[in-house]
Length: 251
Image (tube, rainbow, N blue to C red; front, side, top):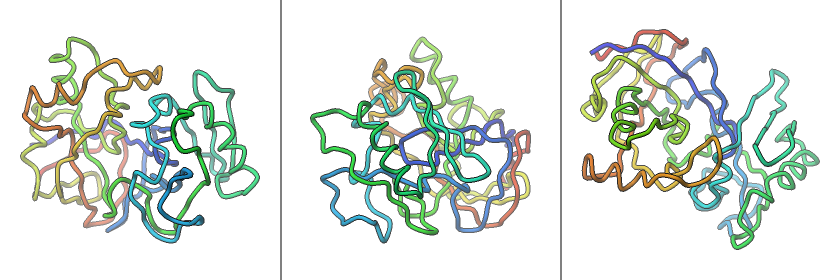
């Protein structure tokens, strides 16, 4: 079973913006570079800021709690500054590591965050740790064929950005990735081992173009498969650079 890598996506700040890139070096036992490097904690977070280790997702701002966050787009500059855009907010450029810019980022996010929820508190970073949903350093692997089948079942086109995945593959049969757990893949110069399926949350119900909920995604997945899985987590076991167009081969 061979496919082709069509999209590489990173999310520099957890749940706040996505960016398509053309190439990336994958390192053994690491996540996609600059993916979930930062996260924004809220006032009810169960740790003192600054954060010293990986923490569970409920401590941070997330799209499941604030659908408008799903419409943020990001671009990480070579100098480390981050450009953020949103349909309802002016464009913003910040260095997420600078205290003054962190305050500007929180001010920019506040109108997108529900007033009924604990307010944004601080920008968090832990050196060498991705603040992703899982403590393990996974990359996520998803299938465009499965996305197309999901859209056919929904009777509409579905944006891949609902799923905030890292690596998108075309050319596999729909849902073939569900049988890949425990198997190894060669992707460009890297080798990955598929670890487990990804269980989805209500963030996928939101249209990332508008930041509004418009589809009962979990009901749709339940109807199709009896679970809420879409895509897989994988571990990088051999380092190598990946580039759009690379073949993806099951070993």
